[in-house]
Length: 320
Ligand SMILES: [Mn+2]
Image 1: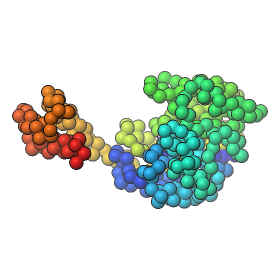
Image 2: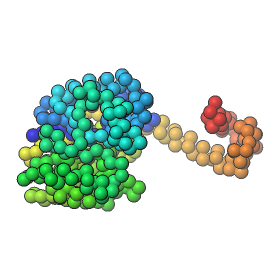
Image 3: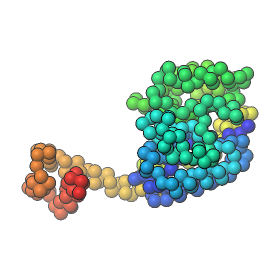
Image 4: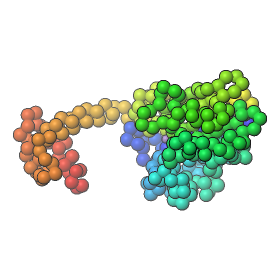
């Protein structure tokens, strides 16, 4: 059996601020390209974060319909393991009650993957709290059901997993503890971390756990890794129990990311810092916008550019 794996689509009507306007269309082009590889696979599993915005009102019907169409074009069963962006307030019961992904599932274009599915793949959605107890509970049925050859089993999850030594201080669940909760047997493909980790883990030829993350399909931020990495999907083969990365023909970073604007914004942030240190002596809460401007005009280095920036910021602060 072969499984086409992808994660972190972050579909959105509007491009995130670091991306060019073709963001949404580019993602659908990548999904269409990925669908060509689905022909050789038995099913498709998406490792969460199908939609970018958690508030359901901010995703259009048009985008939901395009997503349904794109998923149907895979021509194979599509499973989604819900990510933190697919639900609201970290509550899984929001999904079918109000979220855009719930509509995609109701349409029949995708199925939710939690626990075992008919392909013998096991889903672990985003957890509200990443505690040992919650992880162990989420993997209970896995430990009982992985059978004689765990090398032929696959877990797909949306989880804050990192190779040892690369963990984020404020958000991670120790990979070794996750592997222990799996009974140290099987393979894991995970989303949530957008920077690709490749294949790594605690395994040898005979046993252990292999983890794989191929990075997000979306390049929604201007991080360094997004400027250089190859966007792609992964095919997992139960015969060999190996993950194979499949590069997609994504736009070069210079066309997908607003690199020039980013440099400009950094410069304007620097000017903002200077502006704020200029007003540090004034209690903003107690004065009017006009008097703040008067104060600023008396500062050294005050010019028309600073004046325009200050007026803009003050207008924004007053909600006008
Ligand atoms: Mn994500």
